[in-house]
Amino acid sequence: RLTSALPAQHPMCASVPARHLVSALGPARRLLTAPARCFSSTPLPVEPVELNHRIVGESALPAAPPLVLVHGLFGSSSNFSTPARKLSSGGARAVILPDLRNHGASPWSDDSSIEALASDILALLDRLDVPTAVL
Image (tube, rainbow, N blue to C red; front, side, top):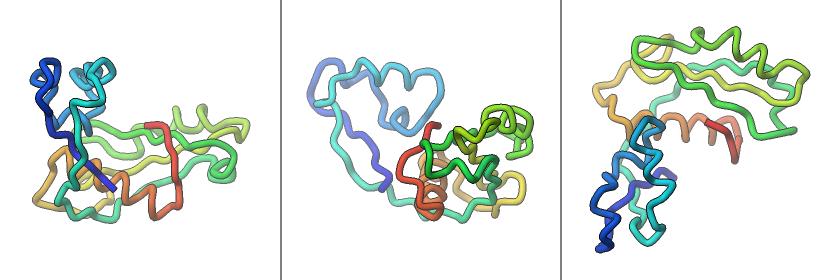
């Protein structure tokens, strides 16, 4: 279940916007030093879309948590074809390559917020029965 963070009344919390919890970019690193008491969980009201995806090294799925490689703006899952083959070589770990909403072969949606993108990734992992992954 996707959750968002709501700042509490702690001095360090004021500098950690909620959107950084679901972002894997830049300022999110500050969350590593924010005290746990800064956040409380609330569900995000986002309807996920069914993402197109590819799995490289699928036979390794039960062996170790798979890697999920997420492309950038204007990209698609094909951006990581070569790195995915190299990362999954030897069968030690599967690599999941999703097309984010509004990219590649995934459906289009009006909502392209970070929360929506995160919701889609979590729904994909649920659909694939992957309880843990490395993003």
